[in-house]
Length: 352
Ligand code: NAD
Image (cartoon, rainbow, N blue to C red; front, side, top):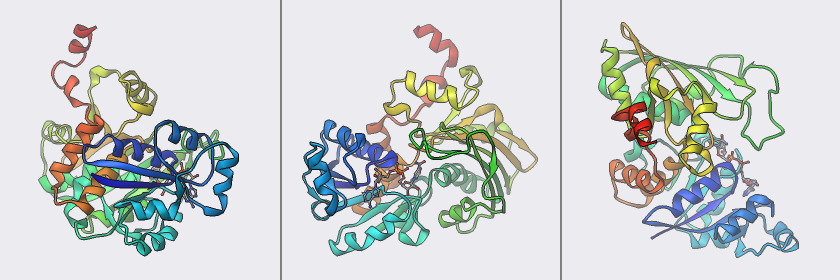
């Protein structure tokens, strides 16, 4: 069993811990937190050993009546790999500690690209095989990579133009906005997402624009990809629908936005209402000559979670991308295609 430590138990860290715990070949050796807040309390309830991320603050846990198993350095020493889910910039500061204990680490997309080799399971799993330090790219870059990879393989990509309407903040981030506005952010072109995609696809020509909107639910991408071929719309729809970790939303589902998507995930009983898949509206997938257009939604809190699990196997095992992603997805329950694929609404009502 691969012993995994999770440093930073917030939006991403708590999901990564649960995803790791669900794997047949991994165990959570412990999770590290800075303060004894409600997330620390739920970590203990879920049975994770809790470590104090900042030694000087360890007494705060005792004062709050929460037992800690030790300090971060002990967790790093006990782990075969650490998944660092601390806020942007802290991960890079932590790398020295991981190196001192000779413990490989997986970082998140908020870190600068030089913290480790950038990773997306669908796109460059094999490239991180010899790396000790890997960075799972951001939620938006993950969502773009999952679409670009099959298009690049099948047709070649001449140019990607993406407009990203990003959620203002996560549901718990009461300090973020906008409250009642839509803000070009950044107002200049490109946003950082385009250059980030080229960390995964160095040869892809991509321009990105980004905005922030007053929602906490999901990001929305408007995508235009100029291909090096002119396939039929139906052929491209089939290609995209056939991808793992992509949910092609059928017209019959009556899902018109992020609210319905999240409701669907909750109705399915998914933990935290998570949507690990890119959610692409089937009717939006359209070819105009060599130009592909589509809309997709990305659940910022969860799409990178299965990628973190695969990054662990890419670093520590000889498994292929296909073996690892299949194992991850089965253990987590990733994949929304099957029910709609044969019958859509008819099958849903027939089962009622
Ligand atoms: P978060 O603020 O929800 O969680 C971070 C956690 O780390 C908190 O529990 C915080 O208390 C803890 N922490 C703070 N300082 C720490 C320290 N020095 N040592 C250990 N723990 C510390 O943040 P998040 O949204 O989970 O983001 C984590 C990383 O994931 C960032 O790089 C971010 O860019 C990336 N990411 C976030 C999202 C998202 O939408 N939330 C999506 C993809 C990637």
